[in-house]
Image 1 (tube, helix red, strand yellow):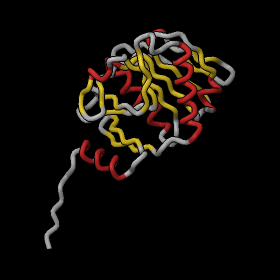
Image 2 (cartoon, one colour; image 1 turned 180 degrees about the vertical axis):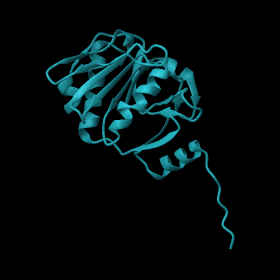
Image 3 (cartoon, helix red, strand yellow; image 1 turned 90 degrees about the horizontal axis):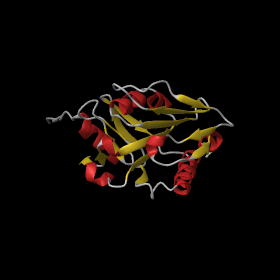
Length: 191
């Protein structure tokens, strides 16, 4: 009996993994397939509290939306894409659809990642990918190292060193988002 094997593209492999692992986040970063398990309760609650802060700050009235789990097409390599935990996007972001569930980076004002078991991706490849995509602000709630990092104003495909926030400090949402808000680092870290 002959066995036929078909070599999959990276994108096809990502699609198969996404179907086989419901609830997991499958991404391609710098040509590398990554899989992240579903978020825990504190992770989800941090996103909820951040969304409430955006509501209080008038994000929708400023012409933006915040969305969870929307794909960001990355210009780093042809198959690259990320699915940030939360993104602040222009209200008409759906007009920037590229393919599947991925949207062009120019409609993203900020992306947020809350670290889990894949914390090294959030602190390494995603910093590089988001900077190369020109994302104005990248907020990392680094639960592994108990701090919040804020990268802003990428130039020539790189972010300058991040602002670091420890417990007891407030994280100020950057102007590029379009609203003024301060969120306690503790709230982001603890959910």
